[in-house]
Length: 578
Image (cartoon, rainbow, N blue to C red; front, side, top):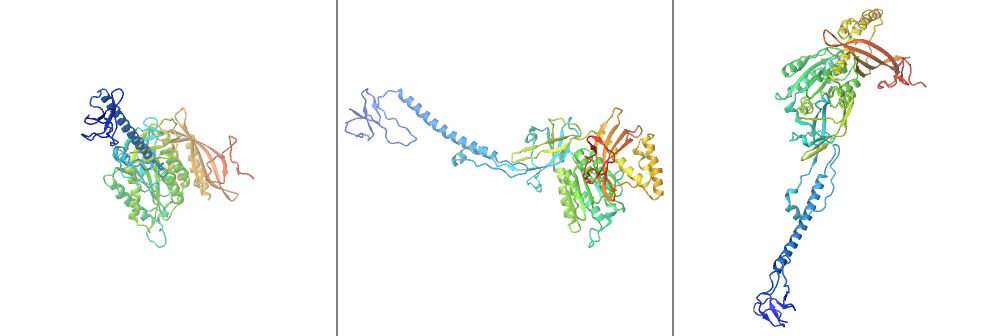
């Protein structure tokens, strides 16, 4: 068999292994006259075809195509592995999420070749950090028309101590109940914050916080309120009302809502204790009704020693009204911690603080300012359109999610009560004013204090005037004066409008009485009818019906035993017989 050189084509002997002319590898000739190639050792990334000089030309492009396809297939397989590994890393980073109360849960990622990561730097994803949402206020007054406004702040920690500075957020980063939101804005760019300053000036405020200090609690309260106002920067958007109180809540505030801080500060500086009692819960109730009339973010902050002593509103009624109106209450107490103050703040979405003369007052007041006012001017307002229709006074719930590029957050399921219409709230407020003024008129034997709250000319008006001026007057002359007992608890059981435009309110109240020398509680379920005055336009009480339901031993009982198998009962004695 003839042999030929694979490089120069020189013919050689069959005994030779290499070309004597160029040293190239030799190849033999097949029976068909085609050269049989012998491959010499080459690098794995290169392919050399050794062929006879006169070989046919059709095999050259064919083999070249095969080589290209093999090379392309290898590159595609390599890139596919890279893509799978990179995608695994992206999914792992996306799995690093957390709920609003927990730490991130991180799933381990499969190993990724170093060269693959370096080859695709655009697929690197920054870690997502958890954030925590504090809902400060929920305004449902436009529930069906314009949606629900949710005012909230963002924090880095679960304890809500490290607030996140203003960050660039957009509404497409949020969902409520899994649905897109209608709007998102910074409060400082859109709304004025309304703050009601409730100031205790009762007789207990004349006392010293302790025996070693000669400064009165009134001095501390006055200084605290003034410093709170003075700490607010001039550029901050805010308006304030001053409502001071002692034995009774005033009919009008000392300073109605105004943005004139000099006027507010001047009024606060002139406050003095008048030696009266402490109508704290009534004053908080009035502050809630006054503040409700303002637009935008709002809250009540009360400075007091927390010792309520007057007939009227209760802790529970204040909390119920705060929730219904969506207005949080912040309490600043003096002279030691008080569980009731803490309870009110915690249950209404506010916060409580306690100051003593041992504190650095300036530092503590600055901290309160930063916690309260600053939070409200730096917060966000989110608006969403509810998918579920609920009637005024009924509860609604939502879960809010935030998915920002660097941080994620989710609230628990939050439940609120849809706000009543303006007329229903005005009627409630009118009944509250009647209750406050009625107590004063009975204890002072002065019908004029309550006559504007009652429909003149009605049978109820005439009977009430007789009862106060004659019946209670005679009892007082005999040495047995009628004293209005303080309420332990009350609530509005229901409110409804009747055909003539009047409103009927079922009103439950619980107050202490002595029964066989034992302290128990009488529960009344009353029905009040209120009509609008033709002259003043105010709502007035035109009728009253009373049902004594039962006697209770537990002052926190909301009146669930006022019926026996659905039938109303009059005075029934002990509802828990042996």
